[in-house]
Length: 243
Image 1 (cartoon, rainbow, N blue to C red):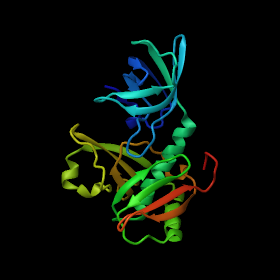
Image 2: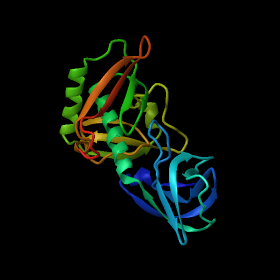
Image 3: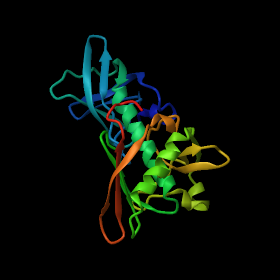
Image 4: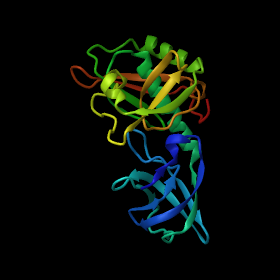
């Protein structure tokens, strides 16, 4: 099992860990800050260092059971079993993905009551697919979305018993993917104040601490993807990596 440090400390950029297994498919550590690709968010990249060696990590994916695989660069020397390693994320890349992921949550908030059929977090652009017959007005939606960003709402998370989905199924906005159950607990991402959140939904991804970190975004297109499916694509208004 790999302890998922990114769930409770999403702003952590480095860690120390112990190698549990290593081959060309991936390096398994006992703990990691590297996010494993899932939920539309790409896996992290970065570097692992140990006494006498260093290796680039080009992707992070889920392995068997609760293991996380840190995918090494091809033909690189692997750390030995049991080695103590120091890991460091490509933080600039991760922060861009965190800004994008939080922006998609705000896009949900700007379209209350509409179910999500799919999504993808990207570095240059991101998208959300929605169960809606008529496309929303692009200019008005972009204005609402940027108002939520500019309000600089706090973004946080907390854990609840997963039975909350039985009493409040409306927490889940996605139709195609349901939150995993069976562990007994569920991670909720909350945007805004506890008493009156702007958005509240299950999510295992990484997010910024405040919406103001996102920076202004533009909705580049709204596409028809079926009789009852609309795809909204957004990107940052500035091409820079900071808002």
